[in-house]
Length: 99
Image (cartoon, one colour):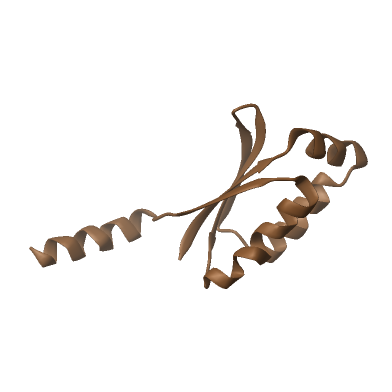
């Protein structure tokens, strides 16, 4: 299932990771494991934020995707199922077929 994982990084811990030069390494390692369709980085509510879109094949993979962010960045994680344009079209067509 296509998911959006929001990674809200702890400011103090991520500041330290930047100072130590490890933030980019943490992100690269996590992205290699997750293999996202897309990843975007910004701020939200005064915190560093990553939006990572990826395929979650099984819910048992949630710890594998989240733990690096929890353990290394003190992050808060949110998972949200999402659709792309093609998925939306399929869903609407299926609904219309139901009548």
